[in-house]
Image (tube, rainbow, N blue to C red; front, side, top):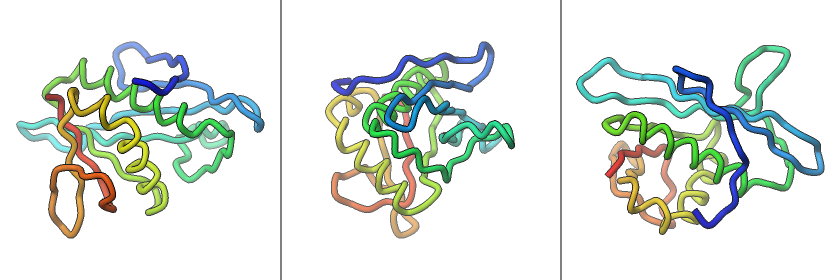
Length: 148
């Protein structure tokens, strides 16, 4: 990918990744975790992402960090997706934002790195109760990724 990413660590034998955002608001722990959604022939995983909340010991997907490193954070999340899909090549990854504005942010992130990811993934967007091939400029409510 053209955009710089943060170094991240992965917990052994899990689908849990963490890294730190570094900017004007300090170092903020970020977590990406993939949860299996369906027990079917096709493996489907939800991509959970957000700031780590030390009080609840959970991912806070509503936090707004404003740390000035949005593209680097999104590139890091994309790097974890690539690693996850290499480990689970037959899996599908489902992603949506915790709000419509976050989903739009993720859509813009996908569009920014489109040339880098099209050779790796088939990306579908969900709109009007239908999955369709991802197109720049279309506002989707969710995304589904499959390794090529």
